[in-house]
Length: 112
Length: 115
Image (tube, rainbow over all chains, first blue to last red; front, side, top):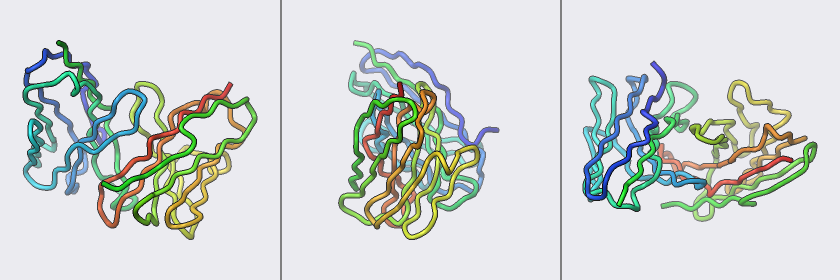
């Protein structure tokens, strides 16, 4: 299994829809996980961190399933402005606690 | 959140020249900074870890003599792409963790085009 694996998409959804992405990871010892959002030709920006079972922030919910080693990101009531690539980030298996591995990202396109 | 700046935002250079990219943490000190590279439609790939006061550590496959890293102070790391070639054209992004957190704060990136 790759360190971090994501479906690259694209996910094309209508405005107002609910969409969910999954991300699987290989390091069972990982304690923290992150979802970043990256707009085209821009740097990644932190969206949510997940340290235990999950986290919720407005329309966004991140959940962690340790048994199956995946995290998910749920976006409710999608807005046009949610169109971006969502990167799953997991601390590395080795090399220091601050090193992380990025997934390839899942592209979301919200359609009017 | 913490702020990281990068300079320049974009650069176009001729093949064979060297390009220096600066990464600064503006409102916090960073003993460690990370340099990433992102090719189109690919994920961010860690190139090296910049350590203040000591040598950088490079990821496997990254040439340390080609990508020179200097962490001159607690707020500044520089990446110099030496003798740049067209295949070095990419989006270079730095990041710094604040404190002992795993959360990475990214600079806005530098888009390098080598002609």
